Length: 152
Image (cartoon, rainbow, N blue to C red):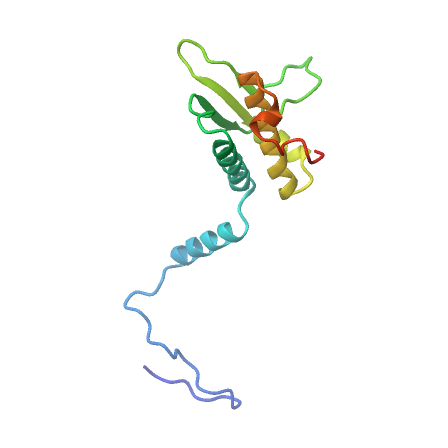
């Protein structure tokens, strides 16, 4: 490899480590950077999914078997009619002959209501617990004793 001349006493110029047989492509470097940034600062949707997963894991550890016959899903926004005055944060649907019971959590309204990521985590958990309590005819504190301790 040719060496560049030493200009202005800054030392040798040129690569110090021999390059691989195929240099990394620009796309590969972009994908590595995107993966690194996604790990450090997840997108809003990824953070919301983490919050929901953590909530379901906590509920599953506190109440084993509660979530066995209940599907939990996420939608961006609810379908709202013109005469509705409030936007729902979630919806619970009882089981039918063809479908299991379901809880649908609406991401955007919960994000709008929260003041930050920590508050969003608590709000998602509280919302899921309240919907499960409505489905199972239980008190929310029976599902998670700490659910009402913080103000949301």
